[in-house]
Structure formats: C-alpha cells, structure tokens
Length: 115
Image (tube, rainbow, N blue to C red):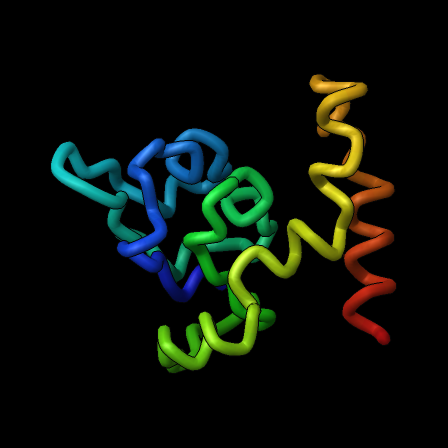
C-alpha cells in the first residue's frame, strides 16, 4: 500500500497521479500530490515504477497501512527499490514503449523479493 511521498525528492510531475489505476492521489498545484485515498491502493506499484525521482514508498502490505518513518525508509534505500529490482528502466532507451509487458517485470520483482 502506498505509504509515503518524500516531498524533498518529488518534482511534482504527477506521473503517479496519471498512472494510478484507482485514483489514490490528488494533484496539488503547489507541490507534491496528496495521498488522498490510501485505502484504495491495490499495491500495484505503478506509481513507484513511473517515479524517476524515487520519491514514493509502497509498502508490501496490500490490506492495511503500516506506520513508516521517512528517514528510515530513505536510509534503508527502499525508495524506488521495486523499480530497480524489477528492471523497469533496463530497456527504456532501446524499447521506450515496451513497459506494458508487465509479466517479466512482476516475475523479476517476485524473484528479488524472495531472495
């Protein structure tokens, strides 16, 4: 479930707003979007995949929010971990429109999570 937007990293591009299939975020004209409907998050990680600034943290639990400490999440290197582990950006320069092939992305992320 989406847990955190690190405002210091967010560039307010609103890609997370655009890609979220359940409209969890509300855009903010004056800064980072708001997590407006956290309980609607399906933990699909689309927001994290598209966040090039690694400003979002999506926790592993889909059924309940979890208390998080932003400093701990940043220090632990958890921001953008799903995108990195899935190889989401690996082919972006060669096949810029191939990210819809989610099967490989989810398989690699599951393998990384089980290590």
